[in-house]
Image (cartoon, rainbow, N blue to C red; front, side, top):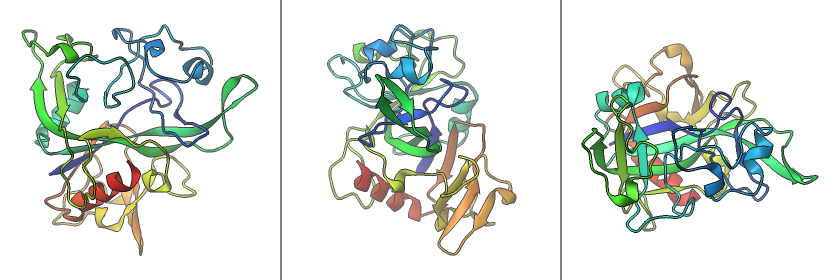
Length: 278
């Protein structure tokens, strides 16, 4: 099984700011702007004024939103039969295909987050640093390569990748109905969002100078017989510590693939992570 650390949501380039951690601890990954999308920010279940305030009025309820990965059943009004979907194309999709990512493999979505408060009638950033945080999971059930002749189910036709024949390698991933991983103590859906921030979801290391300086379990550290997390082959990116390892994560790239065939602890780690934070 492959585990894919997948960068999604607002950041300094896509959206222009982090996604918020709300005052009650809720993680709210904001979908990036998309002028082609038929779903607007106003149609998404977001706190009033949040998009307008956090983007300093660069975006508002009328702007199109790329709701992808689409894994929160309550995000918008749904059609009968809806299932979680994730779309990818171009170089990122080629990277997934080259690593044989497919049914049974697991995406762990992460993004840039920062705490917010509501004060003086507006949403405002708190004086806390931004950091990379895991915010959702998605275990693949089916892979749908999209072609101009592809006919999607009605419930999938408003996904932002539907009908986009202009996107090279355009592909949709469909989530499993139920998660299948070692260490699970509950029956969990195949895809979902972590509802609240917890320290175990944070990738950025404590006191890190940049958000891309990560602290990971020690078993992540690569060796000659274990290929590293994709995009992270340079040895100088890694530091082995007594109880963990640190990684200077790539600033570019969306999909970082780890093969559990070489890292047997990965599947149980992912199962425990989801169980304790869902």
